[in-house]
Image 1 (cartoon, helix red, strand yellow):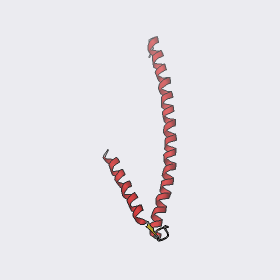
Image 2 (cartoon, one colour; image 1 turned 90 degrees about the vertical axis):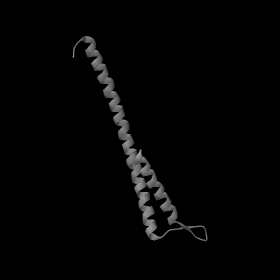
Image 3 (tube, helix red, strand yellow; image 1 turned 180 degrees about the vertical axis):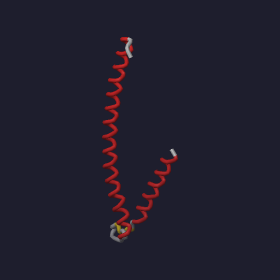
Image 4 (spheres, one colour; image 1 turned 45 degrees about the horizontal axis):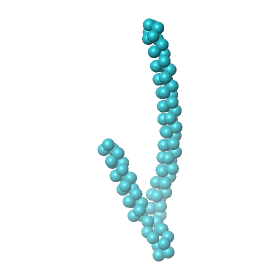
Length: 88
């Protein structure tokens, strides 16, 4: 739980930092310094990569759950049959 709170605080700090980097011009456009753009650009790239990683991990988890259910269903049937016949 403590780790989750820590991650949430970090995300909030990052959001605040990003918001403070921008400056509105008289015309209403948003302006960034080159160094701030590097930060925002890097975070955006990391976000895209992270979304891809999460998608891959979700697929792996789904496959593992299906495999686990299959193994359990086959295994339980095997042990029930064996115990009914008196063999181990």
